[in-house]
Image (tube, rainbow, N blue to C red):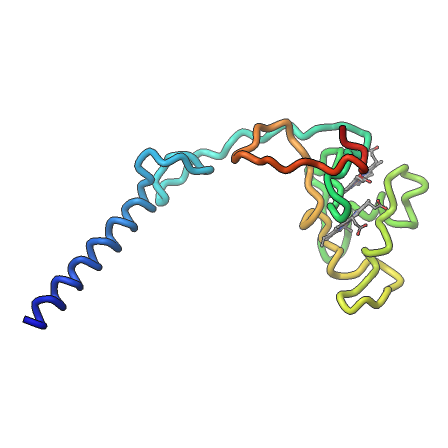
Length: 152
Ligand code: HEC
Ligand code: HEC
């Protein structure tokens, strides 16, 4: 008898796992961000969004927000040998290029030591700074930007 209930439990578990797995593989009409396609299918890439070429810095939404990038950055290389972003945004070049200087925090290590050049943890700019496209939000968002930073 004990064996039978164990068997039933194992079967029930296996069925549940299978149902969950099926749901994940084939979302069955569920709206997902990548669209309703099977996980083992390669979808054609979405069209590239047109990046806003605003020229003016875009108001920040909260105090420690990394400012979003108000210009296109396609093809700007950041690697071991060169950093395209710093060719305009470093203190050395900013005055000449009219770009905002990277702030003092970008020279600080994680232990709070200030270096004489950009800190390795701030080297890969697009880890935090992203371009903007005029796209509809993928999910509802009720966040209200802070007014004191220039938002209406
Ligand atoms: C050719 C020069 C140039 C390069 C290269 C460049 N920028 Fe800029 N960036 C600017 C200028 C100039 C501005 C000021 C607004 C404007 O005129 O577009 C700016 C603005 C910004 C701002 C907004 C600053 C603020 O205070 O709101 C961010 C963030 C930024 N850039 C990030 C980047 C990143 C990340 C890269 C590399 C992927 C990069 N930029 C490469 C010239 C440049
Ligand atoms: C780990 C996240 C991170 C990385 C990587 C990073 N930043 Fe920032 N950046 C921020 C944050 C957060 C702010 C706003 C607060 C501050 O100044 O620290 C900022 C501010 C800025 C500003 C505005 C400065 C000001 O005085 O208003 C510029 C310009 C900028 N970053 C450019 C860059 C560039 C260029 C790089 C790459 C060399 C870079 N950032 C890498 C997070 C990052």
